Length: 155
Image 1 (spheres, rainbow, N blue to C red):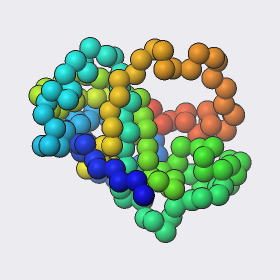
Image 2: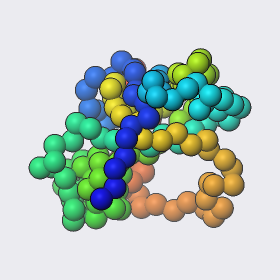
Image 3: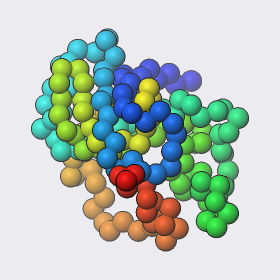
């Protein structure tokens, strides 16, 4: 058994789960009171952070353990749950790299987090060049098609 306790919560204007238009979403990650603001010292010296979060609104009965069509779109190929980034994952864990805007005390202001208001944050890690892939990234055409509106501004 593994026990993970959230370290923070997301605050933003997105109240509903949506698949697209996350590009301009600005969020505040507010640390839990058990953490002093020192836990975030110097995070703003990085341009980006990786945010690990919990898809808390995903119904346990909708968890996928095999394969499915991404976004339940039959025009897309059926692929394994670990070959996509859908929220209906066995452990309901999400991860996104975001732009750091600023830090104020125990709050981190970020842009581009695809998590709704109230989402529990499990971890925050600075993005370091040395942890990015050293090789060219390859992905199937369906993934690029699926993501074409994901980071749009929604306007």
